[in-house]
Length: 418
Image (tube, rainbow, N blue to C red):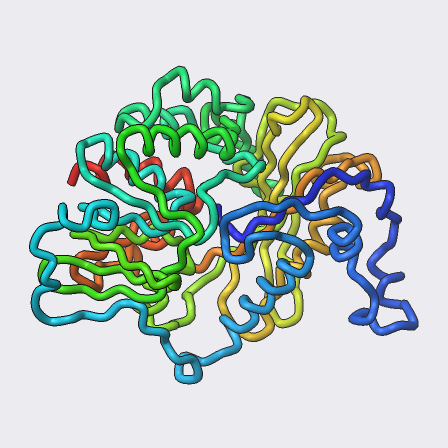
């Protein structure tokens, strides 16, 4: 998850909620575009937290607008109009780095670019005696939201030597069962032990980061990559502050919007996009079950796009009446596709009937949103010597958990041993 994810401090929903039906909104004498949206009112009345990670750093209503702008640009700009920025260059011959030990502190066997999820691959490798460094443009720090995962997937971190079983228990905020899959009038299927743990990313990443450093791993935080030169014998990574790092292998863990991936794909539009919005709120009826995927409404048209809405809902570890709920849909990257703010407006309208709780009864703890591009040619084949994509950057995705932490954990053993 980077997820382009928004978090906002608690603010009672009663401060901003009022019942407005769809018809009265459209009957307003003022143009709708001139009126602040319900999402804007919520997010502007609540001070945004200083979260790190993702593209924006600090998330707010302005960050939502910027992401919507980027999404609009993605489906409205033709490939011919956009110039592909060249981050990676192949340089024939030797780098003349005859002995990497001479460049102590700046030369490594593996350089992992992107630390939020890259920290897991990096720690698995350094535990096997490989010299590893991480380059992260922000801080390697987990957000306050919870990641949902199964215990089997979480124990992969133990199997590859990243964490102990005791540390695993410490980072689990909540555990719940059963888990529902349901579609319209087709009935429900109830399962056990699927995405049924809520994990604290803040505790998890801080624990893994300490382990990485204790094993000799090196962290370069607040560093931005501006270019990579690939030689026959090494790769040189250039940073915007003028420093250079040397490596035998570069692991690209910079996610869906990695500049290296953008170069490889030549700015080609994605074949599909998953749009996700949601929130973590307090005030639901106490419940220890979850929805893995649930569809309770027919398709809906926004602008020129027909949408099928799906829901997820998970108990949150912050309190017995806290739940995280997501609304997501799949679209093509084409003009007429809805914006995230459009989906958030529908989310506020539909959430009460989905969960059976009036909106004004809820205290909004966090607002969540993100876009996830997908491509048919995934996983992404390696395009350069000495560079490998992992996680979301590689296009490895799951229809259920889609990508991010869950996807990374499933492949850690393979990534750290081959």
